[in-house]
Length: 403
Figure 1: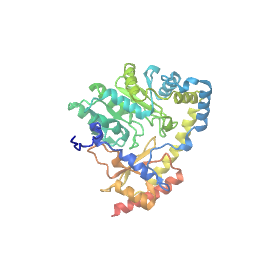
Figure 2: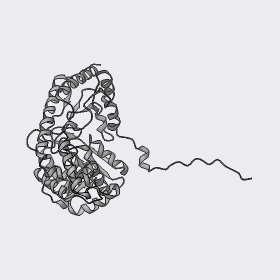
Figure 3: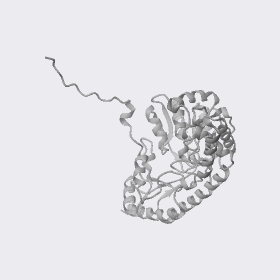
Figure 4: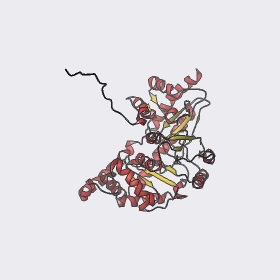
C-alpha cells in the first residue's frame, strides 16, 4: 500500500518588495471622491471639455488614411521629436532630436530614468510632500528616501539638499517639480533653480526635472527650466497629458545623447516602443498649427478658475488657515491650524456636504506628516462650482477647528 501524506499546498512566491506593496493613498481616495453627486476638488485632472477632440480626430483620420505604418511596430517618430525640440526652444531649452527620448507618458519617463539610475537600496532626494507617482516608481528598488523641506515661496530647500550631500550622502538623483508643484502649487524661483543646479553639478548628482505643468503658466513670465542651465546633470521630463489629453499617454525626456541608448533598452523591457499611431497623430495635430491657440485657451480658462478658487478660499476658510498662491498648474495647498486630521475630515466633508479634496498625508514621504494639510484642484470645476464647493468645504473646516 502506498502511503499518502498531506503536503502543504504550494503558494505563489512573489518578489520581496510586493509584500509591503499597496495602492497609493491617493488612488484609493479617488474612488471615494468620484462618487456621483460629489463636488470634487480632488483629482488632478485636466478639463475634458477643453480637449482638442475635433482637431485631434482630424489629425488621426489623416494619419490612418495616408500612413499604413502608423499601425506597425515603429521607432520614435522623427517629426514628433522635431516638434518637441521646437517646444523646448520656446521654454528656453536648446536641444537636438537625438537628445529627445519619447515615452508612454511622463510616468514611464520616471520609471525608465529610475531603471538606469538606481541600484536596489540606493538613496534618492525627494521633497517631503511630493507627487505620489515617483514614490510608486521607487518602491521596487526599495530606495532610501531622503526628504527635504519645500519653501512655499521659492521651492525646494537647496540648503537642506546640500547639507545631505556635504554629510556624505550620494543619492541616485534629486527629484523635483519646479513649476506649479504637485501637490504644493509652488513654482521654484530662478535663484533656487540656479542654486540647485550648481549643487548638483558640484557633487555630481543628477536632477530629474519633472515639468508636467511648465506650459501652464498664468502669472508673469515663465522661469527658465534647469535643463537650460546644465545638459549633463539635469534630465528634463515633459508630457502632453496636461496640455493635450492624458489618454494619449505621450511624454518625453531630454537627456544627454550618450544616455539615450541605455534609456532605449530600459524602455524596451516595458513596452518596446510608444504608440506609432499616437506619435504620428500628435505630430499631425501640431503640423496644423492648432497648438498655440489651444494652449492660450487652456491658460485663460484655468487662470480664471485659479483666481476664483483663491478668492473663495479667502472668503470662506477659517482664520489661521494658510495656502499657496500658484502661478500656474492646477493645485493649491492648504495648511490648517491645530491638529486637524484631514483624512478623517474628508469623510465628514463627503458625507455632510458632498464635497471632496485630497488629504495631505497622501503625498507625504515616509517619516513626514502632513495630517493637517490638503490639496485642492481648480482645473476641472467651473467658477460657479468652485464658489459653491469652497463655501461648503469652508463650513466643514470651521466646524472641525471649533471642536
